[in-house]
Image 1 (tube, rainbow, N blue to C red):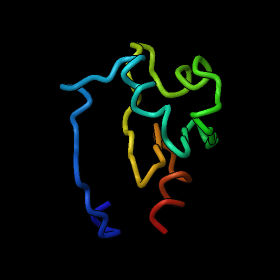
Image 2 (image 1 turned 90 degrees about the horizontal axis):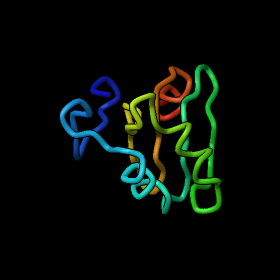
Image 3 (image 1 turned 45 degrees about the vertical axis):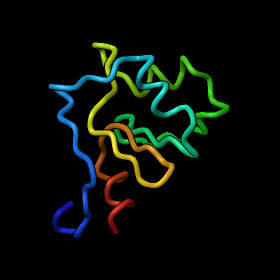
Image 4 (image 1 turned 90 degrees about the vertical axis):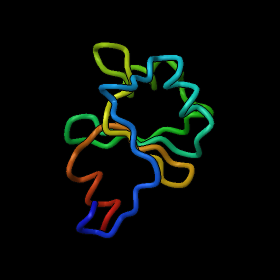
Amino acid sequence: MEEKNVIVETEVDAKKETCQREDAWDLVHKAGKLVVASGQKTLEYDPRSADKEEVLKKITGRTGNLRAPTLRIGDTYYVGFNVGMYESLFV
C-alpha cells in the first residue's frame, strides 16, 4: 500500500485483537457492500439483504474469527486476500 501512497488510518493486529463471528457480523452487516476474496474469485454481497450465515461462512476462518486482512474503504468492506481484488483497489 505504501507503493500506491495509501494512507492507513487505523491498523489492528488480528493476532492480538480477534473479531469473532457475532462481532464480525456487527461490523459488516450495515455496510453498503461487502467484497470477499474466495480463492481466485471475488464475491460481492449486500450485507443488509444477504443471508447472515452465508456471509459469516465467507468472512470467518476455521477459528470463527474475522479473516485477515480486512479493509474498510468508505462504506465497503474487503475481506481476505487475492491479488486481483487488491489490484483493482489500487490501480
